Image 1 (spheres, rainbow over the protein chains, first blue to last red):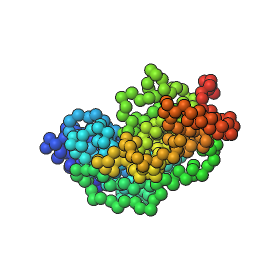
Image 2: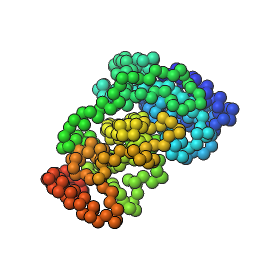
Image 3: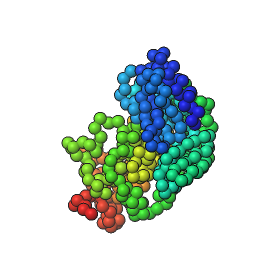
Image 4: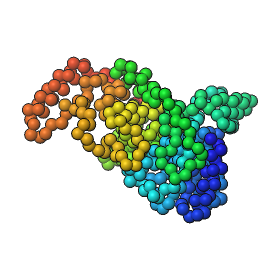
Length: 315
Length: 57
C-alpha cells in the first residue's frame, strides 16, 4: 500500500494550492515503528510529510467533528464509513469535504507483531504483501495476511464508500469471511462463564479512556464518565465501574460502529474492546439488516421507528 | 440491549422490559408479580452488580 503515498501527496498538494481545501488530514511517519501519527497538512510543503502504509489504522474521521471550512481527508474504507456517519449525525457537511479515498488491504496488528519477538523492534518495512521486521540481531519477513489486525482480517468494506478522488485502483472485497466468528466462542458459554470471561477481559483496564478518545463516534462535549453532576459512574478501578464504562461506551456505538478497530489499537493494555461493539454490530445486522456508514440517505436504526421493529424483548 | 447484557453474562430471566401506561395499574401488578416470581427461581445473584466497598489490593 506504500505506493499510494505519492498519489496522496500529489492530490493533497493540488487541492491545497488550488484553494479547494484549507487543510488535508492524513498520516505522517511516527517516531516509533508501526506508529503513524495523524497529520494536518496546511501547505504544499507540509503535504510532503504525508505517507501511507499498513500502520494507518487510526480513524481520521475522529478529527472532523464540528470542523469549520473546507477540509481534505485521506480515508480508507472504515474512515469513509465513519465520515458518512458524521454527515448523517450533522457533525460535518459533505460539501465541506474533499475525500481522498484509499482502497485498503488491511492494517497491521502491532500487538501481534510485538509479541512475536522478545527484543525491541526497530524497523518495520513493507513491500507488496511482505512485511520485514528488523530489530537488534534479527530480521524476519512475513506475509502481511498473517499479521493483519483482527478487524481488518474480517473486513468486507475495504474500498471507501464515499470519495471525491481515489489514490489507487479499487481492491477486491474479501468474501467468505465470517465477520462475527470471534463472538461464537462467547455465545456458546453459559451465563456464568460469560460473566467471568468479560471480568477477565477487563481486569487490566486502567480507565485511561484511550478507546473512547480514539473512537470517531465518541464526540460528546462532556462524556458521561467525565460528568460529575450527576456522577453517572464511579471513577475507580472497581470492576463494577470498569464494566459500566465499557458496556455503556459500546452501547453508545450501537448501530454506528464500523468496526474500524481504532479503540483496540489505541488501548495501551491490549484489551479486546471490540468484543462489545462487535456483538452490537451483529445484533444490528440481524435485527435491522443494518451496517453503519454505507449510505448518506438512510437513517440509522436507533433513530427511526418502524412498526415492524422487533419487539420480542418487551412484554 | 437485552441481547447485549445477556451476552456479557447476565442470566436470561433476570432482565425484564415492559411498557405500562400510568392507567394500567392491573397490568403493573401482574408484570411485577411475574418478574419477582421469575427472578426468585434464579436464586440470589452471585455476581457483583453493585459496588459495595472500595477494593484495596
